[in-house]
Amino acid sequence: DGGITQSPKYLFRKEGQNVTLSCEQNLNHDAMYWYRQDPGQGLRLIYYSQIVNDFQKGDIAEGYSVSREKKESFPLTVTSAQKNPTAFYLCASSLRTASGANVLTFGAGSRLTVL
Amino acid sequence: QKEVEQNSGPLSVPEGAIASLNCTYSDRGSQSFFWYRQYSGKSPELIMSIYSNGDKEDGRFTAQLNKASQYVSLLIRDSQPSDSATYLCALTSGSARQLTFGSGTQLTVLP
Image (cartoon, rainbow over the protein chains, first blue to last red):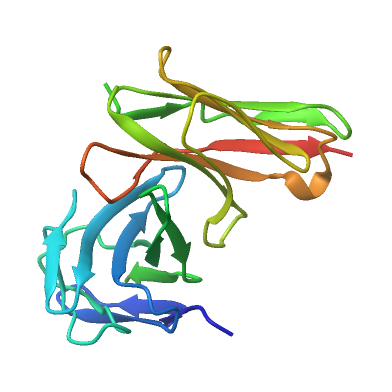
């Protein structure tokens, strides 16, 4: 079955540590995205990538880094520079429809907690 | 002013009633509109998309778009307890390909 796989599902980090969240898709989608969700809030865009070896900052990129070396993979690193990293992280990919709109498919999410 | 505004709720309706969820947006250039459903602790799933003014129906769901008034709504007919979730409004505008999300409305359908 096609889909998006995020790992790990739960992750605990000590302050000062970098952590990397994995996102893999087998949908053959060109575009991939990382969102952050805090309790009671909507999704905020961290980074997105339209094609391999290219990515752009979203609204809240500070303290995060990404890479896009393969079409299927878009890992997110939460660095020690991110002051409040505890959140639910969602990876998505998109298919451009005939109308030109991007329809997102989401992974199951990774919940990061800083101890 | 937030780009996408939703009442956070919670909105409670009895089973079998119509649930009405509303979303307003600030960018008149917005072109594509989506409603996502998110169960607690889960990822969002797309339930409706709408691109032109008017109504779009899919089963028990109807999306309504009014670009002149800058609002989009979602009606859920014959609400079921399984519809209890947070509903997120999202849109794309201008040349941007990424979605902008509202903060969501929490819906509870009471048995």
